[in-house]
Structure formats: C-alpha cells, structure tokens
Image (tube, rainbow, N blue to C red; front, top):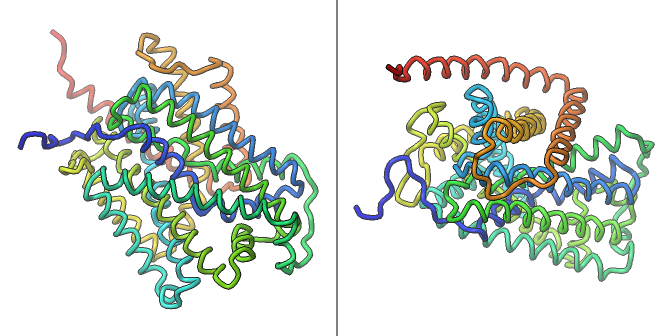
Amino acid sequence: MRGSPQPGQLHKRLGLPFAIAVCVGLVVGTGIMRAPGEIANMVPDPTVVMLLWLAGGLYVLLMANVAAEISSAIPRSGGHYIPVHEALGDSMGLLVGWTMWVVGVAACAFLSLAAAEFLGTVVPWVADHVASVAVFFLLCVTALNWAGVEEGRRAQIISTALKIVLLLAVVGVALVMPAGAAAGEVEVAPIEVEPLSVLTVLAGLQFIVAVYDGWYASIYFAGEDKDPGRNIPRSLFQSAIIVSLIYLAVNWALIRALDFSVLRASTLPMATVIEVATGRWGSIVVALVAVLMALGTLNAVVMSNPRALYGMAEDGLFVKSALRVNRGGTPTFALAIGTLLAIPLIYSGGYVFVFRLAGAMVLFGSCLFVLSYFALRKHRPDLARPYRAKGHPVLPALALMINLALLTGFVIAEPVSGAIMAGMIAVCIPVGLHLEREKRRRAPTAT
C-alpha cells in the first residue's frame, strides 16, 4: 500500500518537542522523590549537596557536548551502539548495545514495580498483588507503543509536561512555607553523621550521576528525527539545562522547607512537603504523583530500548526479526522481546541483582561512547558534522576522565559487580570478533 513502511524501515516522524520530552521524561522519574534524602545522608553539608547537584548537571552538559557531535553525524536509531560500532568495531559495539539494552530491560521491571508499589500505598488490593499490577502496567505501556510511534510520542510529551508542572508545584509550595515548616510535622531519630571526606563526596556524585541517567534518550531516535542534525544537539542541551534547573530547584526548596537533619532521615522528602500542604489527602496525592513519575519514565524506556536491538540487527549483530516495523513505525519484535524478558524479573525479584550492575554498565558504556568520539575524529575527519563538540579535545577528555573515575570508584566499592561486568566483556568480545571474521569471509573478494 502507498505510504506503508517497508520492512526494516523506521518512520521519520519525530521532532524537537518529542526529543526534549523523551530526554527529560527518562531522567525525571521516581528517583528525584527519594534521591534528595539519600544524598543529604551521604554528604551532611547542604552547600556541598547543592554543589554536587550542580556538578551532576555540568557532567550531563559535558557528555551532551560529545553526544551531540557523534549522534548528529551518524543519525541512526540505536543509541550508544551506533557510534561505538562505527568507530570501534563489532565487538565493542555488541558489548555496548547489549549492556545498555539489559539496563533498559531491568529499568522496565523496576519502574513497573515502582508504579505498582506506590499505587499500593493507597489501594490495599494493589498492595497484595504488586507483581501482577506491575505486569499490567508494563503490558499497557507496551500496547500503547505497539500501536505506533505517534501514540508513544504524544504520551511522552503529555507525561513529561505533567511531571514538570507537578515538580514546579512542589517547589512553589515548599518556597511559600516558612523555612523549616514541614520539619515540624516529622519526628526524626538521631542519626550519626559521617564526616565529610573525598569518599563521601565521590559516593554522592556517583549517586547523582545515576539520578541524571537517561539524558541521552533522544540519540536512540536519531534515525526517526525529521532533522537530526539540528534537533539532536538542541534536545540534548536544552533537556540537560531543564533537568538541572528542576533538580537544583527541588533540592533547594526541600532544604529550605525541611530542617537538614529531617531531610537526611527522610526516604521521601517530597512526600513530607506534599502531605503538610494537602493535609489528609496528602498520601493519595503523593501516590498519584509517584505513579505518574514512574509511568512517564517507563514509557520513555519502552520506546527507546527496542532501538538498541534494531540498530544491532541492521549490522547483523542481532536476529533480523528485530527489523520488523509495523504500520505505526514500531519495531514490534524488538519491543516484544524486551517486555517478555522484563516480566520474569518482576516476578522473580531478579531485577534487584541486575540493578546492582546497572550503574557500572552505564558508566562503562559511557566510557566507550566518549572513546568512539575520539576514534571518529581520528579515523573519519571528513565525516559531516552538523555540530562540532566545543572545547576539543579538552572538554571531551574531561568527560572521559570523569567517567573512568566514577567507574573505578564503583568497581572498588562493588567488586562483585565489577567482576561480573568483566565476565560480560570476556564473553562479548570473542562473539564480536567471530562475527567480524564471518563478515570478512562472506565479503566478495576483489578481482
């Protein structure tokens, strides 16, 4: 039929509003409801806490500077995999693609459970059937995106806009309260304060970088953007600034509304502020806000994760079935396999173990991502670059050093996770080398 997609083709339907919405929507989730208290507990100094949140935003800008160049220069859907494969070959591309895809599958399980658990705080039946409700949420979001990219796009823009409005409302409420007003509503047991040190600051920064994770979401849709050379860089920088300002405003407002000792002891400090402002409806408001946060982020993950498999399948590093695209522009097989693998994680609880690896996986992927930038600059200097990274080579090198430092710190703190990650590398590299040899063997010999 005229206008129908051909097998293996994605639709160029997406633009800047979606690119910004998916980046902001993937970053701003349930993490911001819990993270301020966790960070304050790790780093017991409000000034240092605010500086660390600012440092997290600057880290994202450094990484966006790199991603904007390489993802707009090679505008294919597939995320981190695309430039790494182009610059470093099959083995490294396969490793990064699978690493980021596994993290996405785990995120689908975690976010579905988070949405169900928050709803269970106000609906007793849900509390007794958390796993089943989580699967229901996951299947609903999968069905929405199965219908087509347009449905997922609209849902993402709407949910992200609602998230921003709700967070700004919490900031507004916290700022109009007298300083420390919300703290009077909470009884806090004394907490032993850890002395401020390089290790505590590094631990806090590692946690904050994880909360900012997802800033790169628009690069997964580069092949579906109507003007990737313009929209990908703009989306990365604009969303980084939006998220940084939101995170700084939320933390500043919470530090002002709550005594810092109360913030340190609170697992959900935003909930405290909301409950003080809304009275007896507080718990319901908190639960609904948290469910919306989780489902909006889940939609972004469900949309983006299949693109990693699609990109690998285009290069022969995954089964060709992943190239199946329906009339709505959705890679259906790649979407289905991610959802099917997430469901056992929901029921088994295995997602907890996977998430212990997630931080190291993303940092490792980021290291190879930045290395691909330098490799492309060296080996493909004539590649058309709609955006060229600022401060070359100093700022990209700084981004690489920060990722290496955070990865090293993570592996030292979590040696078991580091050993498992090394095992994944040892398995993926020979697979990639074998595929590379097979490609050379099948290639026609020049006469």
